Length: 212
Image (tube, rainbow, N blue to C red):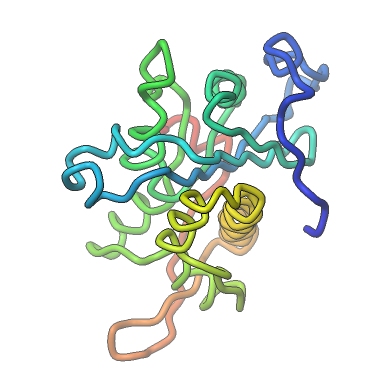
């Protein structure tokens, strides 16, 4: 997607509620979500303090509205309400990381949101983790343009537009990987010895709602 992201300032709480647009009863609103933080694990005293990292930027792709939404820290409550309006949120390491970063900005437990975490599913199948970048390269022939450390530096330099575009790309990869798995019934990866393999997945959103 090449459209330019704008900040979310034109939306109000009322406009991002579950009924932004009337949707048919059999259509699910799937939100693909990722965020970037203000601080690294080292800066907050380790990975046990993810909740202290602070929201730099959050980006959502809304399957029903077919567009991206971006949120800065002062719009975190809007991001939370946007996610709450989803039938299903899809992310990569979203439950342990993204929701932990975002929880201080919410007035309810984010684990209540129906959520599918691709990393959790892949780890359960393989008994080890694979990175989003690894899966994107093997499955989509795509790769991330930067990494989290660069995003942290951009935040310190006030280059918010760069963080938004980087986060948007991660959401795009997350969405495309999920849709590929949903359509094909597998995603691709390489073993530690470099052997290419297919990993069977069952990523039908309706069935995933029973396990989110």
